[in-house]
Image (cartoon, rainbow, N blue to C red; front, top):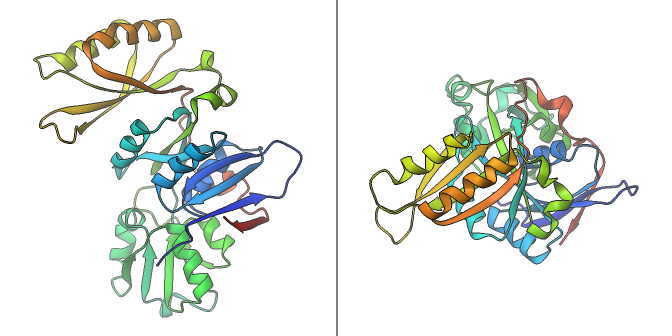
Length: 317
């Protein structure tokens, strides 16, 4: 199953400046929902890409464009490849959004439980619905590129006997029938998305003085206590370490990059801490300074989906 490579879907409002946002996925995907929730009440134009590489390529070609990309899930863990893409890009993080993930099973209006033979979805979505799938052993699970892409394909190709696991809004968008909602195993399933932009656009998207979170990446010399010294300094400056992710440095055996998220109450002390740890690290890079996303309650996100049901037009690029 192949989704369209790159297209624009925009709302019809003309009364405010439009934000152009590159996402991986198509209308109805969780990236779509996250982007519209983050920019709720603003006019957005989505540039929908097949890969995360294309998201960063679009931002490189058009410095006014914004990117939204998933970085970690409370069940599936971190999207390690996106860390590498973010580090290699010339973008900066300007915000984050935490989205409650709810899955539905949907099919053509003329199908029903008795006629479904295959269930198509992204591998992560299938993994997050393992209990549901185990209770329906007569239905074959089939991996595809995208949750919403599965719904779109079934609708456009008229695939009788096929079902998709996706968000209920994607089913509505493509005219499919929801057989059952909330089929995910864990009801406390969240994905954290990063909002990235060209550094020159960053100040228009967030106030640096109101930043309370930062993402860093650095490597360390292969010496005893090197990581411990960095963490001790951060603690001294009252910097809260909320995440640390290590990835190997390709081509350098047993060397690692450390991706670190920190929160702080005092911007001055945060900057002092960065000055203090810089001599202890190799190639430290600040990936972004931004406001921390609030922890959303684990409730049905359908009422908070940022206007996915609004009329949209699609223009091939």
